[in-house]
Every structure is written in structure tokens, then in C-alpha cells.
Amino acid sequence: MSKSNLTRKQKRVLRRQKLRTKYRLSIMNEKTFAEAFYMRLSIYNVFLIVATLSLILILIVYLVIAYTPLKEYVIPNYPELEEREKIEKNAELVDSLEYQMKLYTQKMQVLQTILNGDDPSEYAGMDSIITTSVENYANLNFSPSTEDSLFRLEIQESEALNVNFQAGAGGVRIENLFFYPPVIGEVSTQFRTGHYGTDVSAPVNSIIHSVLDGTVIFDGWTVETDYMIIIQHTNDFISVYKHNAKLLKKAGDKVIAGEGIALLGNLDYSVSEPHLHFELWHEGKPVNSENYIVY
Image (cartoon, rainbow, N blue to C red):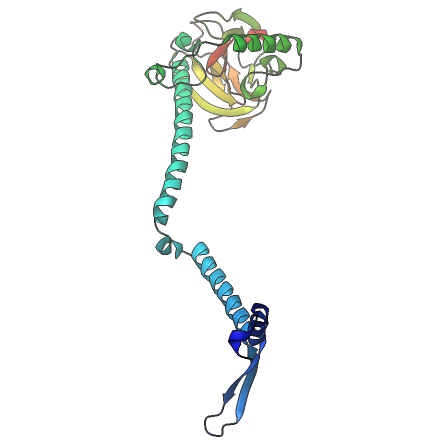
């Protein structure tokens, strides 16, 4: 029967038989013609071997390109893509750094004002974070909507009834903190506008205590403040102790609440009686410590 007379089904069967027909692959010695190696293969087996080796080769090439520096030379525009990702990450870091620098600058301005003995009243209404210049946001509308006002009122009412509500820096209410009295004595000058601290009269050489745990960020002497020490606490609190005769701690020292940090006694007794001028600052704003400390 000729091939042209075969049906379509018979042709398919014939092709499958050819694919599975075994062939002998022999390797023979050139001189002796002795068979050194042989292998029985079919076209189907050869196809599977070639396909398997191709997949293995593709996998090896992929791993080499993906996990070696070779990808920079093989993948088109790869360096540009990598540089673009680095630029985006750097932009985020710069934005965060700019925010931290503004906050640091504001704190330094407040601290410098205190150290110079100037009136820091200009900082009393300042936000804790310096914002970007107004001209960059001239077109923004900050007016609260009706829904926003109602939501704020609802939150304020619920907070007023919730004794466990915590607010302020780091989620802590000032009322919930325990301030160790810096010195036991008599309040001679109270906190008021223009006098952002409390003067407490006490015997000379009385031990001055840290009101909270913290780190000493300044120790020094000035004509107006005598020996002065400033401590940075958590939750953006800063405490200032002026008119001391001797300092027991220096900048960089860690202190705990109630630990002795200085000895009371301003050096020029002709100016005023020995007293501690104590200031408490929270997020760059002066706080009346008399509301939280019993002297």
C-alpha cells in the first residue's frame, strides 16, 4: 500500500511509530572498529533531551544575569532604572532630613534664647514644628468642612469623658507624669508672662534634683544665671536650673529623676536671696511647673 493511499489516522499512527523507532548510536575505535560505546535512541528521546538541556541552559543564563554584575551590560537601560530608584529613595531621605533639621533649628533657637537670658515670649505661640513658607501653599484651603467640625467636636467630647485618654508628645499627658521636685522651698516668684519659670527660695547648698530622667545637654556659667544646667527629657521636655553655686553633672551625663545635679546658691548674694530659677519647656513652649510640682 502506497503512502498516498493511507488514511489520516493511519498516517498519524505511522508518524508516532517513527518517533518511537529506536536507533543505535555507536562510538567505535577508529583502528580496531571495536565498539567502545553505544546508545539506543529514538527521535522522541532526542527531542526530550534537547528540550531538557535547553531549559537548564535558559535557567543558568537567567541566574547569571539576575544575580551577577553581568545584568548591567546585558539588560538595556538597566543602569538608568537603578539610578532612578536611588534618586527616589534619596529624595525621601532628603525630605525627612529637612524636616528634622527644621525641628532641630527651632529647638536650638529656643535654647539659645534661654541661655542668653532673653525674653522667649515670641516662641510661646510657635508650633512645635516649623512649617514650609506660606507662599508655597498660597492656593490651599485650610478651612474645616462642616463634617470635619462635627467630627472634631465629637472627638473632643469623648476625650473629655475618657480619663485614660493620652495626648501630647509621645502620647503622654503632662498630668500623667510624675515630676520630682527640683528643690523644697518657698516659691518667691511665680510663673507669668515675661517670667517663664518659677523662683524657689531655699538654703544655700541645697541639693538640686532632676525632675525627670534625661540627659544633660548644657552646663556652664553666665553673669545673669550663675551656674546653669539644662536637661533634655523624653517626650520633648527640657528642664532648666539657674542660680547654682556648683554643678554636679556635666553635658552628656545621664541622670534619673530625683538625682542630685547641682548645689543651690547664686554667687552674688547682693542681687537677690539664694533661690533656684526653674523652667520647664514642652515642645519648645514654656510650661507653668507650679501646676504639676509641689515645691
